[in-house]
Image (cartoon, rainbow, N blue to C red; front, side, top):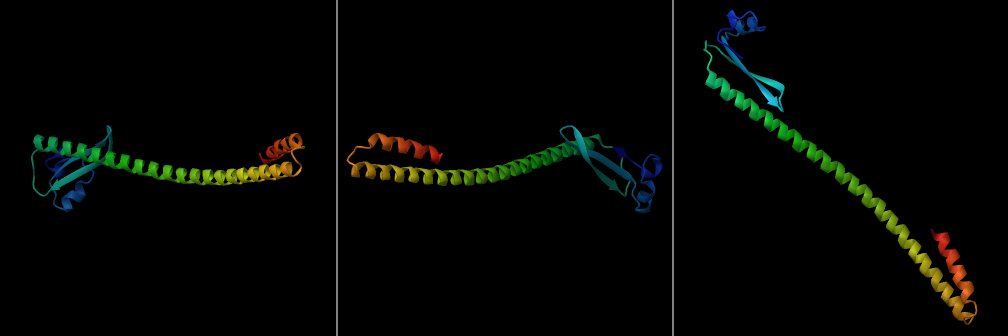
Length: 145
């Protein structure tokens, strides 16, 4: 948008403010992000300036660059948030696995203790109760699950 003399443009809503500030010309261009306008940059001049299409084209290109920059920053922030969330999930899962591992190690230690106890009983009885010991071991290991 380009207005060479804002005092003559009845559609310019801030015409009175511009007159008090002695502003005569204004041009504006959108800040675009993925085809959506999320901002507008306005430039005012205290002297009357005729429309300059080259300047408008250049400023539109700058608006597009700003939009791409904002889009990249938003994507970087989303990636940073996703990374932080993943890090929390990894820490939680690591704690769960550590707890499960501790329980498993305790279960293995208990089973070894029972096997050792069974072996001692078998050796003391001279091997006569080997079949009874295997049954006892099977029952004990089921109780550990």
